[in-house]
Image 1 (cartoon, rainbow, N blue to C red):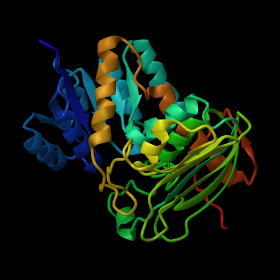
Image 2: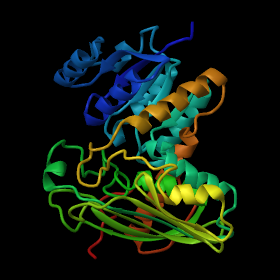
Image 3: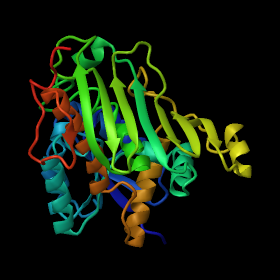
Amino acid sequence: MARKYGFALIGCGAVGAHHLTAISQLRNARLVAVCDVFEASARRCSERAGVPWYTDYHKMLERDDVDIVNICTPSGLHLEPALATMAAGKHCVVEKPLEITLDRCDQMIAAAERAGVQLATIFPSRFGLAAQELKKAVEAGRFGKLTIGDAYVRWWRAQSYYDTGGWRGTWKLDGGGALINQTIHSVDLIQWYMGQAKAVSAVAGCLAHTGIEVDDAAIVAIEWANGALGVIQGTTAAWPGLDRRIMISGDAGTAVLEEDRLTFWRFQRERKRDELIRAGKVGAEDMGSGASDPMAFSPENHRRQLADFVRALERGTRPLVDGREGRKSVEIVLAAYKSAETGKRVGLPLSPGYKPGDKTIRPL
């Protein structure tokens, strides 16, 4: 009989609920416990899932039936439960971003290696069929020499989004605003396609919201190490919210990925499959969009990513988005914040000690 991995959840908020659904749909996994510092949240999650609840994750980690812990706490509170999880010999899956500084990311990566466990960062966009179709085209060299790689996230969040949950819109717990919270999914995708970033130049501001410390709009000019150029645009100040867009061009092809659909797909050397892609018969899905509602998306790609994680454990391989992969998008975002703060071009690699703060968002 195939082994069933025991999952536990730390953080029973809205994203945690998506994790519960995804775990329930895995054939070789089961949820065994949930934890939240707020008893009401822990109880509510427990009642939905039919498993024991805790308010102290240290107690939960004493359970022998916990193999994997999914951490869905606020972004700046990922480190401590992750370190405790891995010290207890459990594998760890952390919601994006991995953490809010590179130093904190590096502590988590080192802890996983020290404990001999797997660490992964949740980036479900990589698991969309269209996103993976695009990755195959990049790896096959179909674009020729890559010249432009852009990511656009023009989303909308009402003021009420920031007013609920005291951690949102703060440097201490959110780590930033639209760039590190919403846009980071697309930052991860574009760097997955384009490779290492060389340098960034950025401006960022708070244009449409009050009572927050962080950016609700940012524009980043990015120089890729392969010589290509690009733009990353991220905002939660664009009503009513548009679909995310990834655009890649080279001297032999161009493709556009909008949410879960390839809306443009042209190459100098065509293949039979290309016509099927353009007709929407390959790779097209509808997973919803967080353009105006942060929870209006399907948990299916979360399920696919967790399935990839379990498969890696079974095979003794690395998951697609391990800790080091999850660190890459954090580095690009933090370099952009440093550029916005200093008004200067910032090269990568970035010092692990950099931490954005009150001076990052300058008057535009």
